[in-house]
Length: 295
Image 1 (cartoon, rainbow, N blue to C red):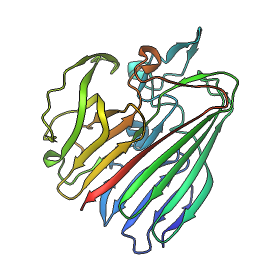
Image 2: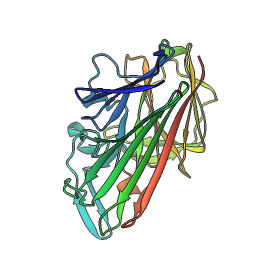
Image 3: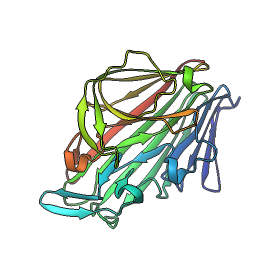
């Protein structure tokens, strides 16, 4: 039997035999920051890499990655979101990753645990005056983690958005680990501000061994599946969006890699790459699955 416990704004989910466990921080955008399967750390934080710098497992909404100068124009009006990446003068990682969520629903059985969180935005966030209800559900089984998101436009105006997830995957030996995905092209960014500025044909043979290759790179996927294989486990990451992108990021000198499924790219509010819109009273839904296929 799975169980769900809450203590000091931390949700702990675990199976009866403790083979599967996960931790969620309600105060930090209800982020799922620790997942273990058979005592193997799958999704994790990293010591001496605080959340304010890592955004580990943050849900990225209403924009993924960055907005140049925090400024965008939509339907003839210009908006200014505060720039929280000060050194590059960008707005980064959306508006929810530091917000407190409320528990909306919990369900447990012998084989599944699920918990749903809610965040209600009344339109008062600076630079995004569009009310919405945001529902975030995590479902855990003994071999998978599922993330389900539902956004409801509760306002009277259409709003723009992209959405993504920022989990870090752990490896006992990142050098020997591989990624495997089918992509069309690699997106290039400006060196000084990490903003999308073009594309180039991707030249990696798959599966690609990470070795010491530095990543802060986005790709447009040709299908919905990304593989990650380490010496101790293998996972498949799948997204439900009609068009899927992925951003890889390898922090220096850390044995983790961010594998970030998204529907849009850096500066999408200005360049339009993957940009979505949601009309009043309409609902948008998306899900991602992390399946452990080998231990």
